[in-house]
Length: 214
Image (spheres, rainbow, N blue to C red):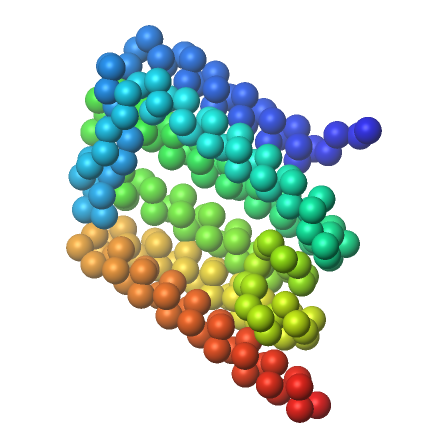
């Protein structure tokens, strides 16, 4: 069976993450910072065994789940129609995880920086690409904006996802703005995400009613 380029890239990223864990294991203290609060201050710790290998293992589990989705979705043919965007998302997601993992290790090695400031551009890139993928997604049961009304009607799905793609891309801008608004940035983003999600749900319902009257 031919192995796709995206699969090879995914495998390489996972191997690199495990290689990093093995390389830095003897260089770390027994306890590592593993979580930061919304103020950017460390508020969670793990043993170095868990902290170093948790990210690579989690990345491997998520990747396996992502590659399983197109095989088990009843609408797998629809997933295949935007598969290149979904494969791209898997790689972007893994790069995001790898970036966060490297920052975590750097922080525990004693480098001084604002974790939140360096995370925001990565979140912006992740959400922007999610906007690209969502804008291309066709009706399925796992990927996208799944409301009762989008799942019931292809036209409603397409219209909602075109709007959703725009809103996700705009969320990337919100992430970048949080760099300059450290005190209120998190709440600004949270408000935007909740508001966007509610609007997409209402929009899909209104579009469904409109299509049902045709």
